[in-house]
Image (tube, rainbow, N blue to C red; front, side, top):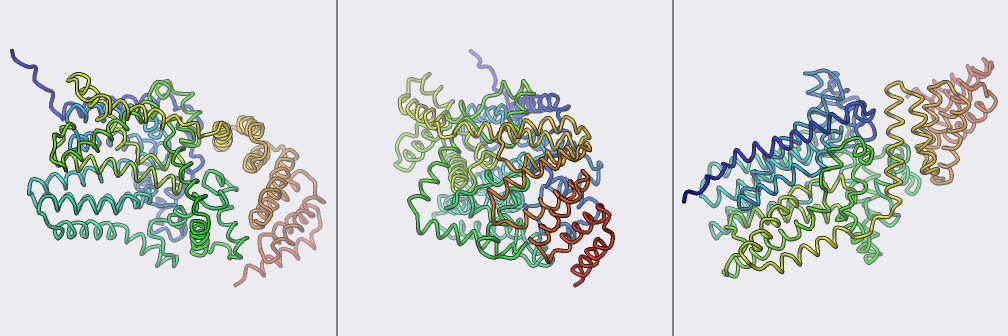
Length: 618
């Protein structure tokens, strides 16, 4: 009896990529008329605005740095803007292409780690995972970053493959590719540095398994490190030459490694978006007496503070890591990003696609099968996972990548957007786990350990550690972003409506009231703008009593609203309060000058304007 011929890997890659492309394009179709899709909001604004400025001709970034975030994504967008024109939809196209292109690359990685059926299932898990489909229709850099990660992992897998085959030329070629894409990944998401030491160790072990010597492996690891450093060095040199900052990635890159689990409970979640985010720099200014924009000192402040916390309260620090790890593992995927509840509501595609609730338990089963296969290989017993040496090493790479990223996120930033790089390797392990369950069931193999691992995964991924307040927070954040997006599109009434819903959801959020003031002011409702800004100022003074620089910004805006509303005496009083707060600021005296001018007090206004001009002189 003739067996039906198997489909070639290329055919499977094309089929899976086609499925991924269809889902992502369909999701974009449902998001087209969304204001959040039409204009950048939240972190998207930072990437988009930087790309626009770079594309305008300042390619070295002399007038737009120093940069708070890594800049590679913005540079790629700027290049595309230069070719296709400045449009936010160019960013969308880049993300969709990157997300689709990453799928066959992940399939290639899975083919080097697992048998054919497991590789197909793992790649399908990535194609169907709703979070990736969601991010491909946003302006965030996550799809771009995960494409770089996919190429990096494929390159490392190929290094192991060609070391095993004794093909030195191809080994060195893929080692160079790995170094370049490691550097590019660092310039996009610096948290990839968490895994780089493990990759270097794995390269050494792979060479040792082939040559029974550490020398060749150490040389290969050194080459990998050198190419990685060489790739990020132009950015580091530019930062130093232009801004006198040692910041190879971005000014906040080191900061991120010291603030996620500190004594004060501060995190990116608490201090975003908008004005509350600026408190990160204001905190060390208020507590440590640092000067404004003293970026190296700010980073040093948080580093020392976090170090002292680890030394003085190790149990509390460890408890914080454990709780965050439980949050990261939760399949509820709350706090995936700012607007994911809103985008899911618009797209039947996202509603229908599965998430980690299904895939994460299967990943536990796959990890169990991989670990037992590795132990049986070392003990020279029957390898029930049916993996050869190259597959075992590549599987270890995937498992190590996922675990280190999850633990690193728990240590630093417990939000889903930062855990995304860990998910593709775990989804590949989920495909392996599913194939192992099928094989054990059909061949009457050892099914009980795999089922036990599956049950553990189900329990771990459904831990009730994320309170309901997170959902309210997401809804609030969506309303803020909708309000900003509507205002940018000239739809001020809808902007005000969205922001008023935000004030009802979380009345104590400063940013909502500040954005509401801007939107009602755009409608020429100046008295309402005054009331909203006064509420923002009241909340700020209650929550952040020491952060005078941000308070000064709020006072400046309030004085302007009061002048526009005809409340001239109140505007002058607010402006004088601003001058008393920051007497050496040219802007504060200029604000007082304008308030006096609108009140008809020309001589006093001229005197304050003269004072402002004097303070501006070097």
